[in-house]
Image 1: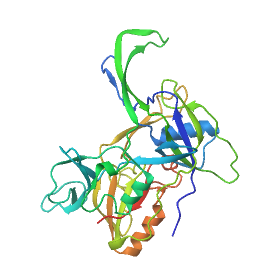
Image 2 (image 1 turned 45 degrees about the vertical axis):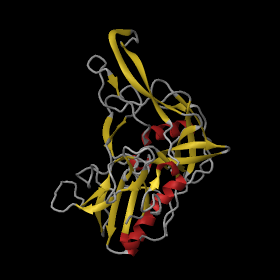
Image 3 (image 1 turned 180 degrees about the vertical axis):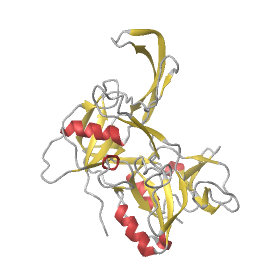
Image 4 (image 1 turned 90 degrees about the vertical axis):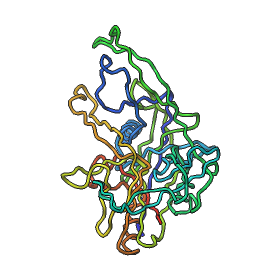
Length: 354
């Protein structure tokens, strides 16, 4: 059984709100709302490089982390195939199950819908973040229970609170543009919460991480420290029926159509087929090279969001186990030297589905 890389974790604690533009064009005269997003792997890769003064071999993250004493507990985006009862005071949480699409046809290239268990009333998406131990139960197929789990039994967290700010556009000399007001949403993390990133170092690495470092826009800073006790859920040892669930712990940017599947669809390994997927809305991710010509080399891409889930069916248990244990805890889907992969896009964890 292969093992995931040995990650050394850092925690970045913002000193103020987090403001990261989503990369789409914005003109305060024509649009009055600037969009912000949660930090992408590129944001953490930039912060990590600044903390060390050099780039590690690979990075994975971000995940959220809660400080508990001298250690940190990682939290992960709620899997997108989990749903809760709607219009109920004490709702149960269920896992959506694949059902054949029958005569209905789509262009999604997956042969099943994901539906709540039979007899369950209206449901709504479950949102938030789950701690590593409960995500491990989800990957093992024990959480939620077959007949549902009360939502109050889940240690759901939602520590990033939006704050609406009003800004004024500026001229090239930084003077105010009269009448160019706009709104922007910032994210304020709760106390003791941080963004964590795992690093893989080359042999002989002896650089300490120092801070504070730039984190997002508007000159914002984050403190940095080693994050003890962070571990990804362990890989499973068997995958009955050749069924492998692939969970995205970080956003993924799959290869383009010219070199592979691209878009929402995970690159399906040889000997498997995609049965169903729950991916959510695509997330804009902007990348650029710092410097005076940053606008000329800026690139906007669309990522499959963290928490997305893919259900794969392999021909036999052996192939399923070999592939699932090989990719668990690694960044998947792009070439080994692709900077989108080494920055942390496409971190996958594998589990079972029924």
